[in-house]
Length: 311
Image 1 (cartoon, rainbow, N blue to C red):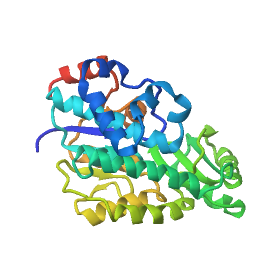
Image 2: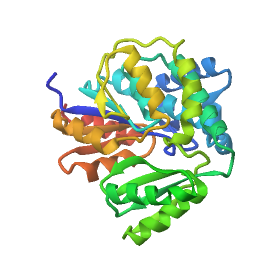
Image 3: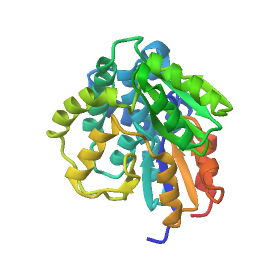
């Protein structure tokens, strides 16, 4: 395949009340996609996304909502004969979107899986006892060292390697706060608590991962139509067992986004399209690899601009 295009799918936090409303007015496939997801979930997901911000921001709803929005945009891109990407990747939750876009998972199965994933993550840690924080302007090694030095107060781990000098940590609240102080002492420019209720991708999620593994055994995994770079090892998996194992490990292992984008660039990818609400991954990707052109398709104007570009 000679294409230098990759599609990347955002993770939790990119959801927005009213997302895709302008595209839904023009492309029936948007509301059709949400209707398909709603039938699988047993409630009106489109209505929730358009009208109920509090419900949208509950983890068990956020995850299927964002996945469905990303797949609706992917289907619009296909319907408009946008160029086929050489690779797909997704950040955290976005990995499920990439697997649906590749044909590995059906949308019906995926939305139920991520709704369960959200509930399991929320249940794994008592409310108020976990935390996540972004550490800016410090090397990966120093962030990892700060977490290790905070171990006396509990679990704190580096969990999202998002871009050079931007690492997210997660774990028990006291330990995360201790690691933040240690990171600041090591020269971090900023250490910010994130407004989330679940300490994702750390070892506290292992009980959730064990339960997710049981659910994944009953889900059909197809051969990828387009290679998907998965988070944990920053590489393409092709067997059903390996893809399942990567999704289970993803719950309690770091998101290797820097390595994933570097891997894509090493394969000759020069253009990345963020397929979903927001522009978070565009910002990260530009800091990871200066030669990578990045754009998002989240509304009618950005979709039109992306489609107009040469393949």
